[in-house]
Amino acid sequence: MLILIAGLVLFLGVHSLQVVPGLRTGLKGALGEGPYKLIYTAASLIGFALLIYGKIIAHPPVAIWAPPEWTRHVAFMIVPLSLILLVSAYAPGHIRRIVRHPMLAGVALWSGAHLLANGELSAMLLFGGFFIWSSITFISACLRETPPPVVKGWGGDLTAIVLGALLALIIINVHMYLFGVAIIG
Image (cartoon, rainbow, N blue to C red; front, side):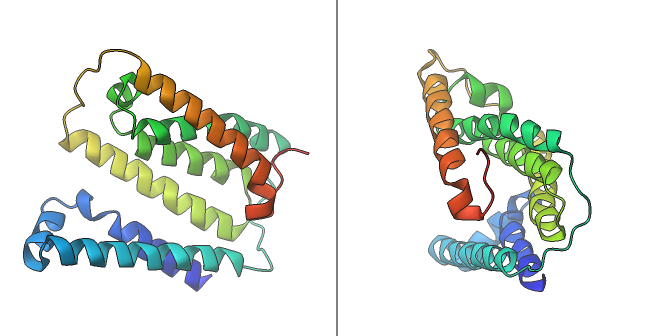
């Protein structure tokens, strides 16, 4: 469990630099743009690898609670929406304008849905950590940044919806092979 926690602290810690005013800018100034990006990327990858490995080795699972069956149905409906939001972060459109930070909102929905549907300690740490981080970072980003400019047309939104839904269908079919949990069937 310590490896999972260390991975969460490293990965989410690096991704929280923008929450502290001036910290990221100060680090870039002190280290230089290239070294900062290299350290940021390396720390992110190491943290990500640690949290994946930590989740894998967190066996036998420690059950905190037994989620009711309906929580899986809720997650099944929410996760595709979170994927549409994630894609819309890269597709300028009305979704991005309204939500302002769709990637953070998507991570909050994804992690919240998984937190609701999982009762193991390791899952609660993993998804709870991402939920808390994305919620705090979303609020912080909304408070310090102005909304994106108005976009004409619906191409970006349509792209986000189609690609997000397609990604959801793919994940539904490979979730068992990747994570050991069947979504359907």
